[in-house]
Image (cartoon, rainbow, N blue to C red):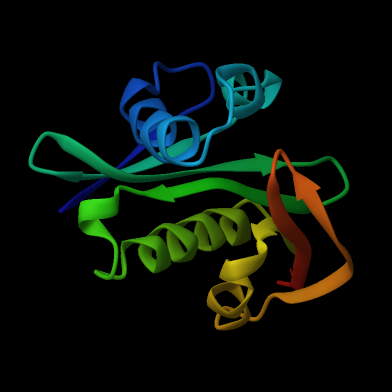
Length: 141
């Protein structure tokens, strides 16, 4: 497995392929819901198995010192191999390097225990994003 970063403005097609498979094809989000204005201006991370993209995530650095981790996805055939954890760890490390003081994620509710392991704590009420329940979570860095 190999980790590759795509910087702001670079072609992040391998990351987009993972996200399209997981969020659009599996979970039913539309392309317009999945891909937004942040995609062109933030770094993206992909984990490759050979030349095949199998996990991805992105990091949005906000002006207030908050790092927003998002679009974290792992292909179904690769789940259970700790690739999601590898993506989160890499995003958090990059956020710390950039001087972020706080990390934030809008987690699908079933994934709250996963993010708790990294120190994220939920706040606010559960809400729907598309048709999927989510919880906002954050942590101090």
